[in-house]
Length: 196
Image (cartoon, rainbow, N blue to C red; front, side):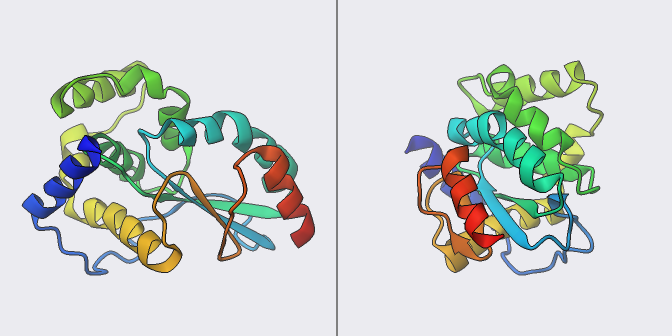
């Protein structure tokens, strides 16, 4: 709860404009799979959410192998940061502007390595050190202060609340309908099979 209050306070302090200044052409969405796939999944996630990391570790590899790599499903990752650390990590994931999921997946798969710290400064330092150790070259300060990326990330969160009533992460949307079952591969597979 403290993290959420801090995050909301941070948004108010920065007086971020929530207009749609950023078009999807300027900043690319992180998507894997065939853009013309029959089934479209949107995953609303927070990079500091342990359940989101579990989705990337326990569910996504099977989903990718069976449905994404075969062209049946595409998955689009949307940002729903629950705190300032997740907000900064989302901006880093989005910063290369190539639509690739590499940095995002690395952040989830190694969440315990960078999420440590009692202050946002400590978490940021751990995040910087993690990126360096992985050979991920980004200008941390430039990425985390870029207004367009900031708006892009926050607009994902706002749209998630308005359009799908998102209030927790991860939340999965399949063909514009919220996935309401427990998020494991077995349940996800059952739902996808009905749509094929």
